[in-house]
Length: 379
Image (tube, rainbow, N blue to C red; front, side):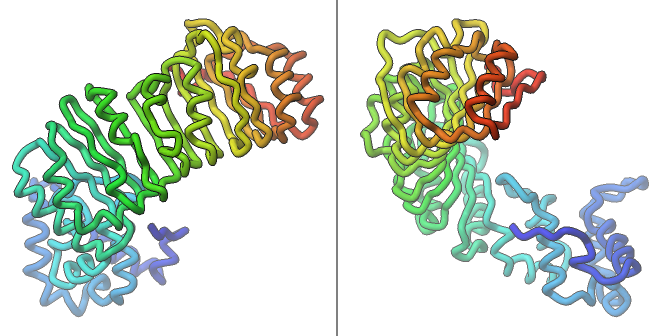
């Protein structure tokens, strides 16, 4: 979404800006000290529009300037549920000209949150369809939440627009069924969050990803080697960025094997012992973040760095892993011959000054970070 460095990019002259802000106050305030409601204010603006048309600075602004102002009225990030008191719908209620401009701006209508299984679906569907139609073929960023066991209504509504969806967040609530992500043929980014849903159901939804997918983030769902082993080896082959919560260290080599093109991996979990760890060489991984549970055995006791070779690793962050496996890690660096540039020990990672000095000796230009604040990745 387009943004500008200052109001000077939009308006010329502070007097004009102050007059516009005065008009905007009338439009956007929900209530004032006298208890006059927003709707009454909006009605007053519309009724007085004819005699203010020549005197109001905002009414004389070119359409292009108003369009840029409208971009400031919608959140820059995230998807939102349509509401009459929020932009962009709010903008369409002020006057005819604003409605025409707003409905003609496809950028205003490309982020949307849709829910099924709550309230009156027909009413929701009408509003959702208006949003989707006004996006006019632009790329869409959508959040879909299922509060029952049937995604059918949402699938039918989205069918004409599936090829517009480039970013998708899926919320699986208790009882939700599977939704095949492969239906979104041009999807690039996917976020999965589960709240009481069956892990097998959710895993089935991402058992195969569209070839266009590059980024996957799975929250509130513990992936273990059993679930990961049920995936086809080519299912996640296109991913370059992955953020997951895992149960068991043996999930790590399996993830690397599933994602041969991965360049960034964030892996948060409980790293319990495994009988044997599958050895694996991954030539593309450049950034790795591993966060464990300090209350369990340290990551070093399980041979994490004995099982992997990462010749292209440039950044490593380790959080809450307990006692650091210094000798094992040095052997990993020697074996990988990686161009490590940044090493971060955050949260509760036990290292010594001597150990850290050795890493700087190996990599003279290494950025070594040891923040004192406990990591936000703590489980």
